[in-house]
Length: 116
Length: 113
Image (cartoon, rainbow over all chains, first blue to last red; front, side, top):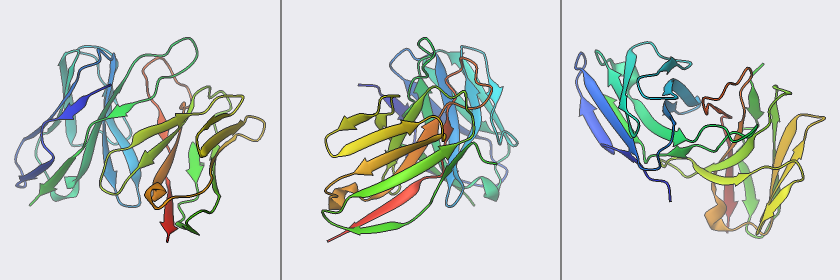
């Protein structure tokens, strides 16, 4: 079974703090993703990575950065947390495409982050 | 136009009912399709992949209609435990081999006793 582990289920931080969210997967997946999910807005892609040290912006990268120094670990960084970054953050991973077929993504449990 | 569109619902059905959800997608070149299930305050989990020939897993049947660019999910004999949000997922437009997928906003199902 694929295991995607996020470092915290719940996190409370203050405005202006630098916040690190960690994600580790144990299936040697090439690709990793960070999403946030807010009521009525669905899943929104923040950043993704298709290889070590590679990263690409998703739909809402502003205010975030990421780090992928090792294949199994993908970190999301809030450089200076703001109240509008209060959200549920979900990490996911998958293998690269097999032939023409994409592979499903597997999610961690999520981190509920509150910025006060 | 959104790449993936779903009716958000909620669909309220009695136990034992049959319910169907549709999802339309805009990328005619999409090759991969999935249905995910998400329970309240939990992470999305893969329910089933959707194949060109359609596929069935117990009470769940998924169909793909390429001509009309929609996929469907049929749930027979609904159980209370089927109450969840169902997310439609497709290959994004201009996709390269990065594993990126596009998630719909989901359709909420409430099964009542």
